[in-house]
Length: 179
Image (cartoon, rainbow, N blue to C red; front, side, top):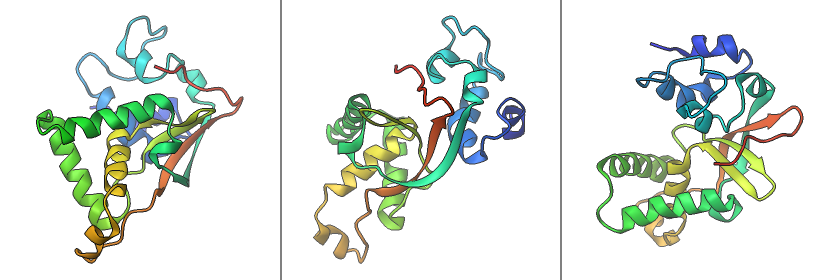
C-alpha cells in the first residue's frame, strides 16, 4: 500500500492535503503504483500529471488559499466538467458513484458551508483549473443557485464562493499540459 510518506520521498515539500485527495487513490489502483514510469508513454499517470515528469512537479509549491471557486472563474474545460456533473444529477439517472459522491458532498457543503477537503487547483490565464475537486466545485455551484430562502428555512447560511483550495504554483510559472 502506497502512503503519503512514500510519495513525499519524491515530492518532499508537498503537503499531505495535496497528496491524499489527489495521488494516493491512484497510486494504490491496480497497474499504477508509485513512482510513475518515466517516460509516461500511454500510461494513465501521464494524463493525471499533465504529461509533466515528477522532476517538474517537485518545483510546484502548494499554499492553502481562500479563493473564489464560482463557476464563472473556472477554465472553460472545468466549467464544462462541472456542468456535466450537474446535468447528470439533474437528469435523474446519475451513475451510482456520481450520485453517492454528490449526495455526500451536498450534505457536507450544505451544512458546513465549506468543502470537506480543499480542492487541488492551479490558476491558468483562462481561469481556475481543478486538478482534484471537480465534484466539490459542481456541488458548490449547484448550491449557489438555490435561493437564500431555501437556506433560511433550514437555519443555514448559503455557502460562499470563497473557499479554501490548495493552489499550486510552478517556480517558472509553467503549467501542466491541459487534458
